[in-house]
Amino acid sequence: MYFKSSFFEDYTLGDKRVTLGRTLTETDFVVHAGHTGDFFPHHLDAEWCKTQPFGQRIAHGTMVFSIGIGLTASEINPEAFSKGYDRLRFIKPVFIGNTIRSEVTISEKTAGKKPGYGQVTEHVEIFNELGEVVLACDHLLVVKLRP
Image 1 (tube, one colour):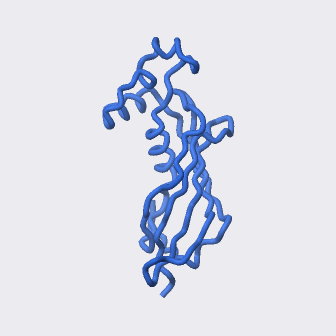
Image 2 (cartoon, helix red, strand yellow):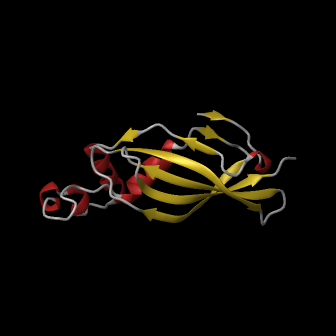
């Protein structure tokens, strides 16, 4: 990670960045369950899951989101801060052994509510190793205007 100042004017609609991949492991499932308290059998009971439509354990959607967003955290912009995420959707299941990667596209720029700031929307898509979108959301950033 490194610091890189980017002001509102520096963001260009359509600009895209792509991350490297990360393979999900059984340890990821167990650690995430411990952190969140979500021990539902869909995530942790291999035998029960064999009787279900997907036939295997499904990754927690919140884990896929957390890891996928974490992959995008490659630079620190002191001119911006995260306002949150909108339109989060779990599109396809993710399983132990799948490799996910993230793509971030600048999809919208609007005037900010506070003078001296604008809002940038980054559309985030998380893909599996087959190139299928498994999760999508919009990341909202509040970004300083150039002085």
